[in-house]
Image 1 (cartoon, protein in one colour):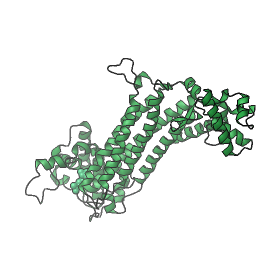
Image 2: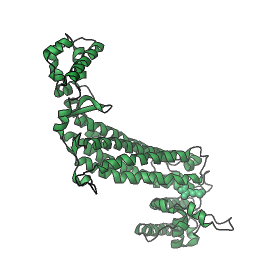
Image 3: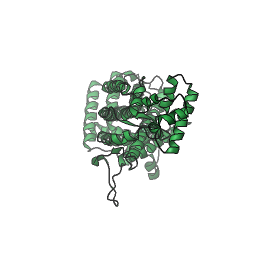
Image 4: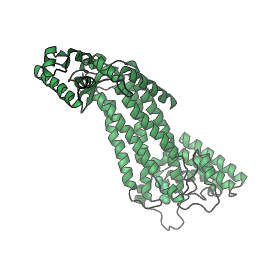
Length: 462
Ligand code: ARG
């Protein structure tokens, strides 16, 4: 068995079954560079408190530097017998600087404040990576929107034809959702910029160390924990990160579902690039939207990571409990999944061919201009309740005759209502319908052009 950090009061070593249960090194090893950065800052704090001489500090830092080199080269690795990354790296340090000096580093810190700090550092780095990938996807969607400024499509509610919208308006709706996810990550990052180092096991340290100096050295802009119990026991920063990544998954799944539908023969709205679609092992004709399907599938996994973590945290008494070792795998997985998914998803969007003729052809279908008739009547002084009835009667006639609204004759209009003069035809075109929704946030080409400018400015700021 390895070099445990807690042998003193034990006559017997741990059973093999316990060791195998207890080990986390196979998943927390990715914290190793952060652990070493924490150790460097902690060594400096011990030195400032007079607990390490100048010579001891430089020997310690040199040893930690060699350890980092070996970790990065893969020539030093933790083993199951080490239990966790912190124990493994202490062994590595002792091997490099000797037990006398190496044994001094652990003073005034605990794995409890260490792991809480390193976990924050790791997730903050990955929040930036994921934020960058989200911006890439936002840009791809925005450029797709910009490439088709006038393309109309059927806007839907309940998946039924509702009112015509611009394709660009629809695509930008997704960009806004993703932009809020990126903003959530930035706000989370600022909230997480507080270092628990110095909290010790739970109650702080007797050694006169300065946690704020450690925080500054480790890049925590908002100082150190105000409460050592909170510093070591709180994991809401993990849960919130898991929520944001789950929300990203959910937002991706909504785009994905549309791509999957649009890519069917029945819709024929889009064609996927060969490099971003897959074939079938048996059906030679197949070209499948696997990236979108994996996005849809992984969103379930990301939600599971969040709910599993919340269940782990529920009713956990203060302060540290070993249950908390279960906090890492779910969010490490959330990072890993998004970091492979987002580049593929962005590639799929950036290479998508949109069949705007097909979309435009279907834009007025399903009586999607019925609201325009009603609102045209309202502009002529007809109460909306009546206008709604009249437009509904138009739809009823069309359904019976098997025609669209713009195919109704002047006589048919007049028979439905005396308010329906031939001028109603002004609004019975997709272009007219779109152009009339010109208020802020509406789907008129001019309004969407303004929106596009705003979105591009926001993306440029990130
Ligand atoms: N591997 C542990 C974790 O990830 C580190 C803290 C262990 N502390 C303890 N007292 N057993 O949570």
